[in-house]
Image (cartoon, rainbow, N blue to C red; front, side, top):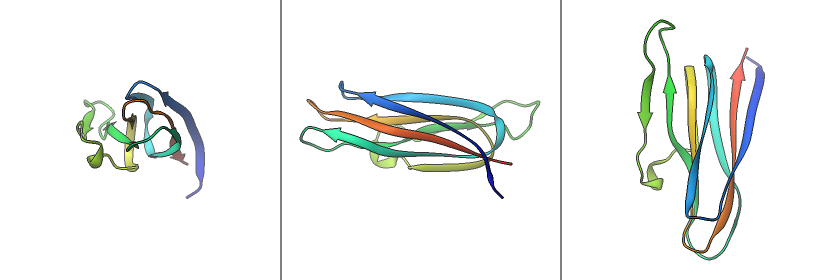
Length: 107
């Protein structure tokens, strides 16, 4: 099945990290993040902090939250009815970095 559309954005921080939420209409899609660049000494990480799905169009969204520990953040999520992905960047003191955030949608 070919990719029909892609949304992307850059998450940048120089203040310890941050999050970026991207929303779409419920559909088969994958969210994926990668570290774009980092400057400064210490550990840094990018990942997916959480995501939402809506399996029943008339029902509520299901929320998955991976928590504050960046070791628990996956780099990719896939779901048949994805509606939102929250991307995250964790940086140490005195660091600056970017994360490349993508949502791929299938036809």
